[in-house]
Length: 53
Image (cartoon, rainbow, N blue to C red; front, side, top):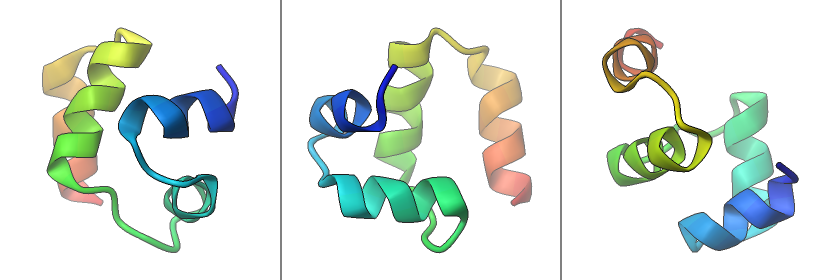
């Protein structure tokens, strides 16, 4: 999935999404949960990794 498509689904601009991807900004909890659903990731594992970071 392209960054632009994911940004649109999360209702954030591509600049902010790019900063999250590069680790320059922390994703909000609501965005993490939406990304988990959109990308069909394991919620428990992904949330744990996000919290550790």
